[in-house]
Amino acid sequence: MEAKTQTYFFQDDGRIPNHPDFPLVVYQNALKDTGAAERIVNRHGWSNSWSGSVFPYHHYHSNTHEVLIAVRGEAVIQFGGEKGSAIPFKSGDAVVIPAGVGHKKISASSNFMVIGAYPGGVQYDLKTGEPDEREEALKQIKQASLPSSDPVTGRRAPLLEMWVK
Image (tube, rainbow, N blue to C red; front, side, top):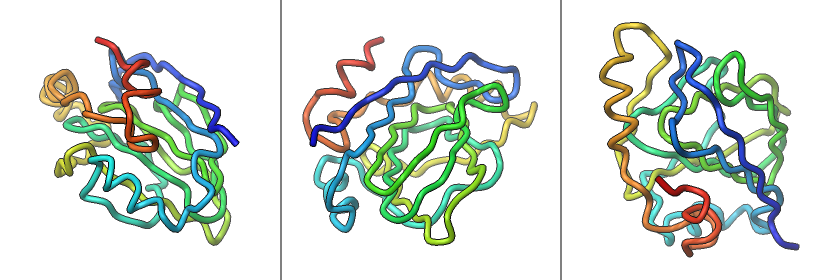
């Protein structure tokens, strides 16, 4: 079964900057073998990986993009800040979050777990939309490097065909 992708653009809401050019990309049914998720994204150049959950408050990374893959359970994640979209996320789904795009766990099953990773293993920062972090964050978002490959497919497609400056 081919993964189905959906894209979402989010505007800067004054608190969560989101990304000016790149959409959030959701891959439904991206992986059948979720046990291999971390190995797969690492092999495709996305590393500094971790496993756990998603913070239950709006946050974003200004210096890097992020891939999340649900490896167990299901959740609803709000992307794009308060005015963004609440998106169901279940085991086998993946999402590539552009630098600056807010994310927050709204609800989850008790067994919900994701793995996360970053292109080139970038050490991510953590921003919560405070006014004093905004000016630097906006600069960082524009400077975040384009990944060399899609974390799920390992090729240019579909991610780098959607992310064109």
